[in-house]
Length: 289
Ligand SMILES: Cc1cc2nc3c(=O)[nH]c(=O)nc-3n(C[C@H](O)[C@H](O)[C@H](O)COP(=O)(O)OP(=O)(O)OC[C@H]3O[C@@H](n4cnc5c(N)ncnc54)[C@H](O)[C@@H]3O)c2cc1C
Image 1 (cartoon, rainbow, N blue to C red):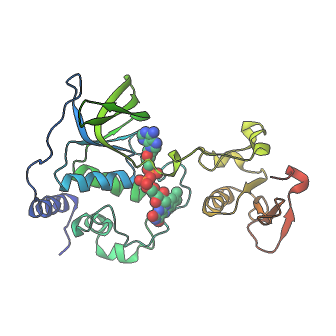
Image 2: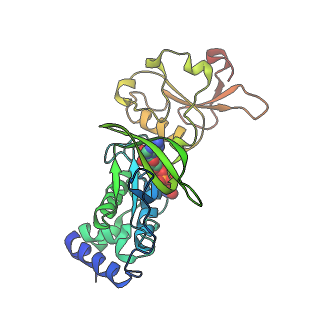
């Protein structure tokens, strides 16, 4: 039987976790730093769904001397409330993962406890804000050690004498810079931190008010009445084109998605108003990329 509300689901989660609480005691030998500082067993950088799932797994394994840090303010972890523009997840609503296979922790359990099984049956896909709320519920009910507003700046090895080495992680939060010592560091910082967002030089040279990257905060309402060119033709391009079309006055005439003609031909090809078939080249307007 489904729980009637979230409080009942919380109680069921606690019971489920109690039933699988082996090992019950910490089993890693505690370490201290050269100056007597606290040493974490694991520091996880990134409190998105990946970092959070790992934190849960470590807790289950009783490696609970760990910490997750995320640079975003609370609620801004991952893309769900920042640069994600699509209305729903792309994965089907029965997706599992952050629940680590425990039925009471699935999105479906969380959703049904609040809206009922019929509403879940009627649901098409999961709204991205709803997924973010669900992740925050997991964080709360599992009491995961996540510290937001703390950014990793760098990592260095720290020799602690014979047979030992630690990692020293430089972090910055509202109080300033400090270092965190850890046995292991997991980088779960998502696509955002695996390099840097880039745009072709000829676009970057345009005045900042006339161009944006898909990861920027974009005021789509301010684009009303203007012609918008979206460079690239992947998922983000179409999400942003759709977001722009939603505010356009003359739908299908103002938003164009552009992509390279082919690997060998870098001239840009444009699909006007997202209508496949009506194509022009932007070469004359923007030059080649
Ligand atoms: C609209 C939309 C729909 C999507 N739908 C799906 C879907 O249906 N299914 C799916 O699997 N994926 C989907 N994705 C992709 C989804 O973004 C990734 O699967 C998911 O976010 C990856 O999780 P993650 O934990 O690896 O990284 P992220 O969620 O990106 O989390 C990384 C975190 O690390 C933090 N961070 C980065 N650098 C630092 C630093 N130096 N110090 C501290 N913190 C740092 C960031 O603030 C961020 O919160 C979708 C994306 C979008 C935008």
